[in-house]
Structure formats: C-alpha cells, structure tokens
Length: 376
Image (cartoon, rainbow, N blue to C red):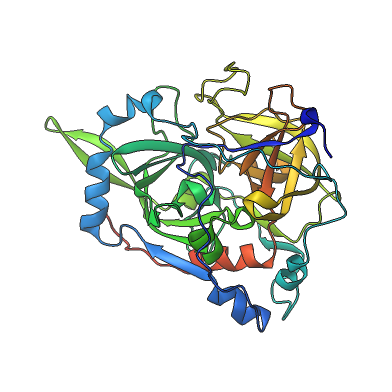
C-alpha cells in the first residue's frame, strides 16, 4: 500500500470543464493499424464560412481582450487523486500501446513535420500563445502552439481545451492568439478555429491517453480602426506569420530531453499563486518517464518531473531541440495533467499523452483541412 505522502494528485491544467466522464462504450478494437487509426479520428466543424468567422470575431472585439484576466484558467472540478504503485516509473504503458504503434508503419518513430520559420518579418518563431474559448456562458483559456503543416494553419493544444466529453460538446468562439501581450494585446493577429481534430476516445470517454487536439484555423486578422469603427484586416496564414513547431512521434520516454512551455496562473495545492498567467514560462529541460493513472484511463502517459506548472498551462507544447535564438523546435507532447508526487501540496511534475502513430494521424487530419482564401 502506498503511503499518503506518495499518493499522486492529478488535475487538469487549463480552464477546461472536465471531471471524470462516464464511459460510453465506444469500441476500441483495431484491425489494420492504418485503417483503425484513421477511423478513430473525428473532425468537428466549428466556424466554416465567412459569416461564422465574423460571428466569432465580433465576439472577441478589442474591449473583450482587456478583461482576459477575468477568464478562468482553473479547473472547476479536479478528478480524484489517482494511486499508482509505480509512481509513473514503471517499465512502460499498458498493453494497448503495442496495438497503437504497430501496423503499416507509415508513421514511424521520428519526425513527421519539420520546424518552420515565419515567411514574413523576422526569422524568429512566435509559435506559442493562448487559446480563448467558451463553454456555455463562461470564457476560458489554455496554452497552445502553432505546428508546421502543409496548410500552414494548425494549432496543437489539449483535448480538454477544445472539447468537453462530459457535455459531449465542442468549445465555441475558439480563437488562437500567438504571443499575447500582458494586457491582452494580439501582436501577431487572431486566428479563428475552422475545425478540431481529435481521437474518438477523448470525445466519447475522456480518455487522457488522447487528451490532445489539433485545430485547423482560418487566416488571421487584426482589428483596425476605420472611421471610428473596428474593422477586420486580413493578416495571412498562421505559419507564415509565426512559424511552426515540427512534430516528433514515437519517442520513447527516457531517450530524450524536452522543455515544457505554458502560461501558468492557477493556485498550487497549498493555495499559493507563484504565476499570474501573463508571461510564457518554461520548465527546464529534463528527461521523461512513463506515467500511468488508471482512474483517468491514462495507460501510456509521459511525465516530466521538476516542473511546478499549474492551471493555465494545459495544451502548452513539449519541445525537443528548442532553439533559443530562433524560438523553434519539435513538438513531442502537450501539457495535460499536473502532479504532486510527494504530497507536499506543491506541483512538481507535468504529464502529456504519448505522441505515437495515432497522434500523428490526428495531426494529419487537421493538416489536410482547407480554409477560405479570404476572410475579410
């Protein structure tokens, strides 16, 4: 039996709505891997037409961004503290990992997408930022990053920053703001979500092995004043403006080091608040280990220790080979859960779903989506 001090406390990091959802019995049988993986990817339309984009844009007028401090990055209900006899250091994930990484081999270990620098302006990436969205009548925000893609329009974040399985509902009014200013400024533009691509086991079960989303966004816009009225001004594709992180798959924990990024704002378990969510933070580069938590359906998680991130960092990128000068590297995971491993009421680790072949298939669905050539 594990002592109380060794119990693991896990909580969703962002302003998402999740408690442990009920299982809906979505089938998990896999036949051929390529077919099974593709069949388990769901693409959900959000704002598809110019009118849809205008509706979302009008919701996020400049005055709205002045109040972003009032939007919630905290978790309304944290799941119960899961116990793990391995404390996340077991030999590996449960048996289904083998099923998710074998098959045709079209997506093998290594790089699926290379990092990309912006086509416009300085050759320095600004890939990281915040996503803002609404569930019901309440605004939330998370961390996120731009990912290199053939459509130059993909954002990676946590699944619970785009879809709530408890309500069986996608987020509304979803936007990405790269490199936001401390006062809500949008120096690189605003990018409205066109659709979100997720694994069906996140949608139907809230399975934290699949707590990631790849979001296809429209061309960005900036608000400009024309004759005393705000008007949308097209600023182009996301990747052209900010660059994009590469994407690495099937990197076995313990064989690489990674840096985690995000905008922490929530309280630590002891009630203290060392961060205010206004500044992008980085947990120092470190090695990763396998991480499991059966109460969360987490059978193939990856944990980064010595990281005190709190609510607000959900969806923030895990980056391999981060170039501190050019601000790019390769995405290998996202912040999903935070952990108090020693029970001292301070978070000391963060975990991500394992980015395997299935995650690559979800990304490919998002990268294959097209959006209108003009929004404003």
